[in-house]
Image: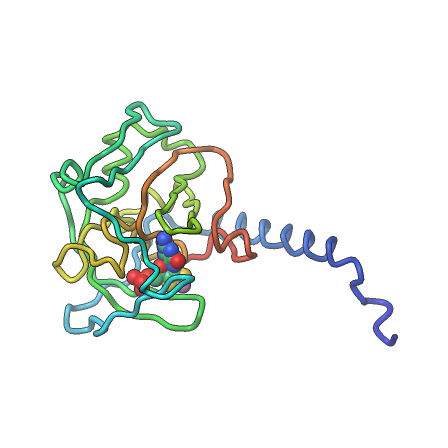
Length: 218
Ligand SMILES: Nc1nc2c(c(=O)[nH]1)N[C@H]1C(S)=C(S)[C@@H](COP(=O)(O)O)O[C@H]1N2
Ligand SMILES: [Mo]
């Protein structure tokens, strides 16, 4: 074949090389990330209606969670390891943001999300903020998870979201809680969150494991 010189027959090594490059990119992106730069905000009139639903399955297969039974488990490098009920979380101070959600699939939409800044919650639970990641697990039938680098977890706009458009977060958008990260791509915004682990270990994620950059942000 004409391509002998660069024919990559050993797809295993090609793949691991791409993974190395991706990891390198994550490092460079994290290094140039300005932890204080804010994602743009918009007036309420700019909100996209209807706001798209997206997951790796159709809406009919989205988790149906009973808000009275649900708990958020907080574990790992935190002083207060405990599970939080929705009632307890609803008592925390909340702020609203109107920001743009950008999906790698090539669409974006502006939405309104209200909830507690994650950095306030990390402080409240006595998280070791020198740890590398907050790792989120979700209730999806086949699982969904995603690691968030600590600098982004502490970003002022990163939010534990309980409301969409001033209403209790609908099932489509992650009831009872999603993590809204306006400085990251859509897949780094886990919905139906059931646990948060503060950790130094890179535990991978649903899309990250399939080759998407873990940093994936601005
Ligand atoms: N639990 C869970 N969270 C998820 C996903 C998913 O499949 N499951 N998909 C991600 C992707 S790729 C996108 S674009 C957004 C879509 O959020 P939306 O339904 O609020 O638009 O959720 C993200 N969070
Ligand atoms: Mo996405």
